Amino acid sequence: MSEPDLGKSIARFKRPLLYVMGPLYVVAGILHFVAPDTYERVVPPQFPRPRELVYLSGIAEIGLGVGVLLPSTRRKSAWGLVALLAAVFPANVYMATDDVAAEAAPEWATDIARVVAWLRLPLQAVLALWAWWYTRPMEDT
Image 1: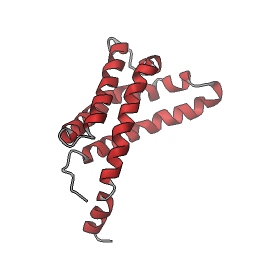
Image 2: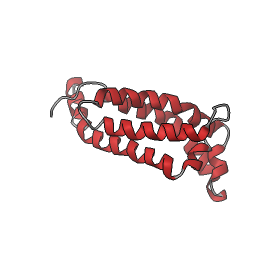
Image 3: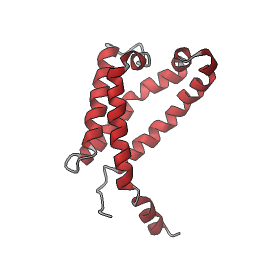
């Protein structure tokens, strides 16, 4: 498969994946309000007002998740998601390096929680690239 063919092959998934990504962020944002204690635990201690940061990031996820679904706000919202993922990255590092995830997990799942916390770090890059994809114009397919 030549490079242009590969690009077209991948591009056909752009629109359907948009309708996965947008609702994913909306649900994640809602969870910040449903279970704020869980999210507050992963805010690094040097950050002030962790509860407010949890709520603020939840609002951002909801707004940006809806925003990427709307053609008029898609590109700006996608850039917002890239920025949000960068902004919350310290919480993911803290979760992995300070064993926060393992401490919150049941005893039988502490090792799994540790592995998942470390796997989240490269996943953030994948999520940022996914959001960045929508900063590029959508071609009608």
